[in-house]
Length: 454
Length: 171
Image (cartoon, rainbow over all chains, first blue to last red; front, side):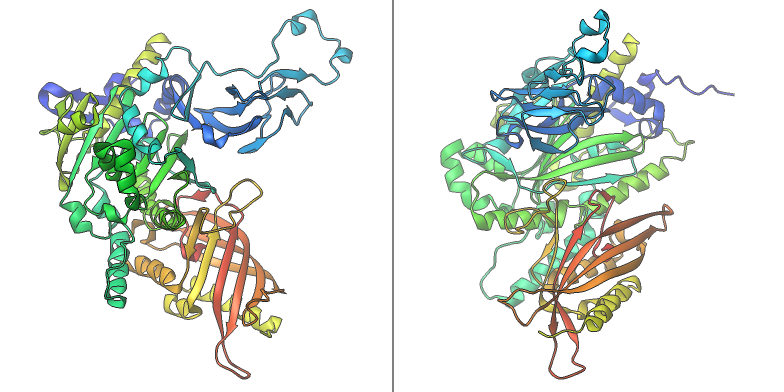
């Protein structure tokens, strides 16, 4: 009888043979709780994670809470305006000190025994400390909220790491920073999260979401019913009006989209940009700003802002700009359970009519209460249930585009002034799957590093 | 508009039954063509969004056509989230007549609470969505026995972390 593989044998999870033109991921990566445990320790809790936008904490003493892997953290601006990131865990017994998603206040008291912290994380009061008969060993301890090992930002996006053994954030993001620029520079004053956050869970592995963002292949089969609704809306609108009314979605003319190109860039450290030139860009709320954008950021950058662009910053955040613009944070809860927190992103100071259009497009497509995301998440759940067929080992979902993908950049990379690890470009219907390879190469590298140290 | 509590209760019960019986045409027929359907998102633990033109909603339709779109998707057989359809049981309670908008005397305001039990036959899992609803009702035609139509429905979903999906028939 064969022995089950050791949980720490992570090499067996990815079959990466560039010389043979082959790549696949083992289904245990999606279904084995031991792998999930390794992911928590050696990926999420060992590298940079997105923790928020600085515009979410604009004022002194503002805070927001989130998680890095399993660890609850708080990002806050102290009384002087300096940003910090701390474990949201009272030093006494571990209670959450900041219970809300966000808020403001100079001092924060643990609800259990009343230890109090300022927004610099300093413990400013231990209840009845003098009467506490504490030994010297206690007094010698530091009682402040524990700082995360690394905390930095790029263009207002805040990142933190629980491990100090990470490259500088600039190097970690690398040329994926140019893709962040294409988001942030859409507003002369930058971007903002539209008020109102939506969270949802699905009962499947987090990597289905990770992949789906770069997955052009699924769009038409999975979202047929959404495309059908858009078709109907268009015909109703055209019947009602002799003059052409503005399009409601870039996907309204799915034929034009399907006749366009899609490509991807993968970057070191697992980031991926899936892109597509966008023949129906006039449906974008940003489109009326195009002349102004061309003046402010240049023609090339403005053109790329109009493109479909789904950016994954490994491991936990995606900024998707297609039907609308969404920032979504992936929070794995278990090997077969994931929580998503999603926001509508917009340029600051956007005209009112563009904002309304953006909101309606967002709600239609991205909400778990809308027309598209529920079909994605239900498909992930179908995968998770089907992956319980343990006699099957390898996915067949990483092979599309393998004959055209190449090392380094291409003409589009040159346009953007980036040097990706690998790039691919082709017809929409190629449904490239090589973008995922970049995710898994970084994934495996971190797992191997972690396991090697255990 | 003058409205008896019993009429309001009957209409809300009817809407619940039509959704549970998946009588989509019957359900849509309750809505006026210009009916607004609005389920705000939440800005914080205590505050839902209040302006659908400036803030995010979970669902916002300015007219019945948005609801017709939802029904089209449900019936399409092409939405994995809708095939097979989840089974539901709507429980509507605490129905009360509320002061309306003096600018729109033709609309009567009715408040209620809901539990909607949702069962997914694929996974044999169930969930309860709950919250509060405000209906704006109008009289169709004149005289006694004239029917009621829904001019506005606002749903405040209390448990807003959505387990996988929420469709129009889940609230």
